[in-house]
Structures are given as C-alpha cells and as structure tokens.
Length: 246
Ligand SMILES: [Ca+2]
Image (cartoon, rainbow, N blue to C red; front, side, top):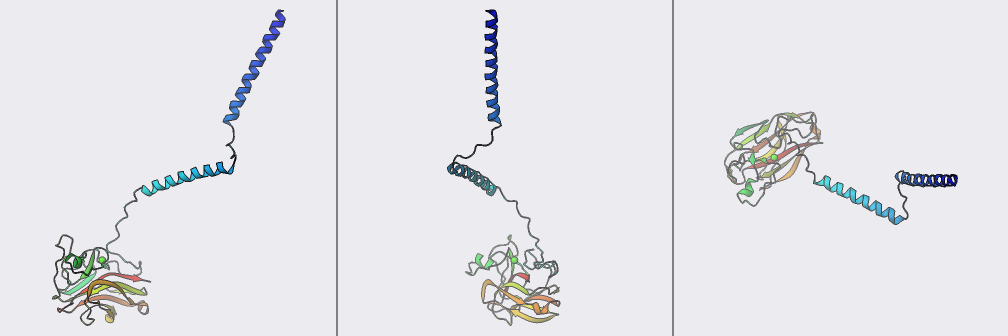
C-alpha cells in the first residue's frame, strides 16, 4: 500500500513539474516573439498613417526652432568676388560714410543719406533705396539720429569719384534717380580717366535699376563718378547699390 502511495505521489510530482515547464516555455516564447505580422492591408495602412503623424510632429517642432541670427554682412564689400573692384570702397553705402570715394564741392557733404527721406517729408516718391543708406544730393539726413525729412535742397554742387578698379565683369548695375538732365546730374563710367558712359534719372526721387555694359573694357582701369552740377529744379542725383555682375 505504501509503495502504491509513493508511486502515486511521484507521478503527481512529475505532472506538476511538466506543467510548470510548459508555462515557462510559453512566457519565453512571448518575449522572443517576432513582430506581429499585419493581418490585413488596413492594419498596415493604419500603422503607416501613425508613422506619418509622428514625422509631421517632428517637422513642426523643427520649424518652431528659432533660426540662428545670421552674421551681419560686411559693410564694405566686394560683390563681384575677390578679383573685382576693391572691397575698400562702399559700393552700396552701407558703411554710412563715403569710404573709398573722393568728394569735391558741397553736394555730397551730408552723404550718404539715411532711410527713405523723401517719404519722411511726404514727397510722394519713395526712394527705393537698398539697405539703410544711399546717395541723394537733395537730402540732409546722414544718420537715423538726424531729423527725418531734412534737406539741403538743389543748391549745392559737387562730384563723388570712386577709387580706381580693374574691370573684371560684364555689367556694372546700380539704382539711379533724382534729376533727369544728363548734362548736369548723372552717374558716369570712366575708363583710364575718360568718361565712356553716363546715365541720369527720370525726374523722380524713386530710383530705378540701370547699368553700364562693360565687357569690352575687361582688364582696363575704371572709376565710377557721380555728378551734381546743377542748382536749378531737379538739380540733384540719387544713386545706390552699385554691383559688379558677370
Ligand atoms: Ca544702400
């Protein structure tokens, strides 16, 4: 009888151990199970859609991240590259002074001028200048600290001539405005000291784009000269944003 009881207990113990091992195998199988396969195209589409939503959120976060403040551009620059006109000349006048230019007379005494001074005095003809500073020989507002709208009028005369530079581009572009008498107010191109081209304004303060084609002068020494030789009506010249373009 005792022997039969021992056999029965042993059999019961073996069964319990086997059952416990089966449970452990199931848990291990669950941990190591491969990713569930999609049961249908709908499930795959749903998961893909969720993925797209995640990407969109990340993208929005990136858009909201403030961009680093760009370094200010050099105020004395050579827009055509290292081989073009000297960077020691302020071709767009953003230095706020006449670096690299030589003035005669008094027309350029308060130049360059700051901001849209014609609009400040309600002229009804915006300057269309580039940046903050430009040449306007009617104006008298050298900096933002000076009273907006002040003028020196048409009386003063003078010239403003750039340092010599070597022509290495095909076009010298610029903005020009002010008077419209080519004989008295203009921007000039000099080659080897002689005037070869000149452009005036259209009797409006609003500057417009114009240019000197210079490909035939490549390799030669050039200068830009601004002329204000009038004290009469529209006796002033506006110029800005001189660029050297290939
Ligand atoms: Ca400018």
